Length: 185
Image 1 (cartoon, rainbow, N blue to C red):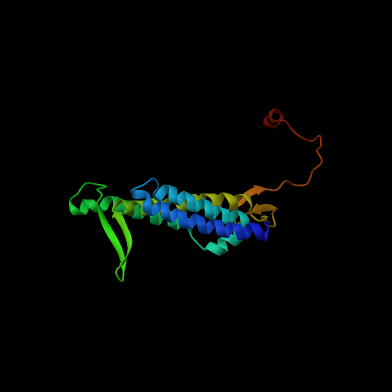
Image 2: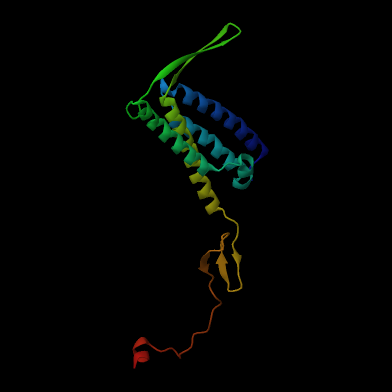
């Protein structure tokens, strides 16, 4: 159980991680950064929420299928890599365009969009989905609820798979045991 102070600070840190992660992702085509390091930074913020709030409460907060994020990212990165081949270009060919941001004549700057950024979107989702999925599965396995027992005194997990038989009560050892050599005669 963590304190309310730690939970409040973790929410603020998560928001900062989210903003800086998006910044690293957007400027990654021209400067150091990109989909991988942006995704890792966001995972740090997400895992901080999982640690401070607990795995069950954080799952209710996010309500995400992290493995689905991994699959979407893998599909998106693959399409972004293959797409230039449909235009008779090489695999992974990159192109770019500069977009100017104006609103009622006020210029807000410009941003260069590269087609390699679409591949970075896929990498971003693969990293977030893969890392959070792995870490949450480890956490769920490590801190799973007590297992139920059936009438045969065998532990069952949540999917009713047999885990291990529970040790039986101590039985008295008698001298009526037969060795393997005596049993064959």
